[in-house]
Amino acid sequence: MPELPEVEIAARNLTRWLQGKTITSAHIPESRVLRGRSARAITAALVGRKVLRVDRRGKWLRASLDDDSSVFLHFGMSGRVVRRALDAPTERSERARVDVGATPASRASIRYLDPRMFGHLSIESEDIAAWTELGPDPLVDGIDTRTFAEALGQRRRAIKEVLLDQTVLAGIGNIQATEALWLARIDPRRRARSLEVREVGALARGILRSIGETLARDASPEVVYVRDAAADNPFRIYGRAGEPCPRCGAPLARVVQGGRATVFCPGCQR
DNA sequence: AACGGAACCTGAAAGC
DNA sequence: TGCTTTCAGGTTCCGT
Figure 1 (cartoon, helix red, strand yellow):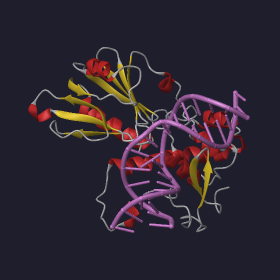
Figure 2 (cartoon, chains in turn red, blue, brown):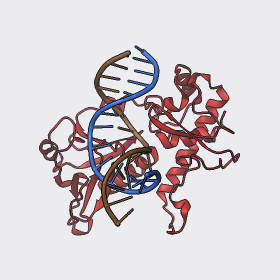
Figure 3 (spheres, protein in one colour):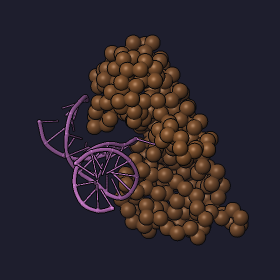
């Protein structure tokens, strides 16, 4: 379930699990998530390498290894990383596994799971275009309103669709775009270039707020009681078409833009 | 160049 | 209950 906040959590976890550690073994079956090299070649390139650091930009992860190569990982729609005991059984959706740790207490198995296989995993000697061509990352770089406004001013498409373009801002997905537009009271169907400067500012704040709240929630999962219905969907309007707008009470509407569902409030998003 | 739509996949939930 | 349909938080490619 990966937009920027989830990938940021994964980056923090991978840093804790892998930074400074040497990969003692790797188990990688052939699958379509692997790019450029065979499973066998990727496995061989990983074993014996130390992980120097893990970085995130947008929805991409980059693990720098001690031979100047890097692992690039993208979660697609259904990717995630987990830590398991060394002897935990292989899971159906397991696409890659590396084992680390020199001492018995520190040994662990880090696994990339991805049932739908829309993700990407590759080893590269240079940064890939998908990484270098990303726009500013809201968490890493912040959002400069002037730069953002200039980018939006060149686009004729709907603002919602433009927010999903990773070269404008990196890391925004369907949920964050939907939530941020609601926070900013902007109709997702408006052309990007039609936004006033103050609306661009409101949108930038909405994006940072939505990402920040999702991140805080994901980083400190509260105990959720089974009977608590709100636990299912923590978002303000995403996935809530037909329900009353939490701000003005009008029924939330659903439209499809660029093949993706958009929920918005016809009452207070203008 | 820019746009809409299809394609790539599996699995969970909703519908009948 | 069980089969069928729909939908999913992403990206890329293809034809217009």
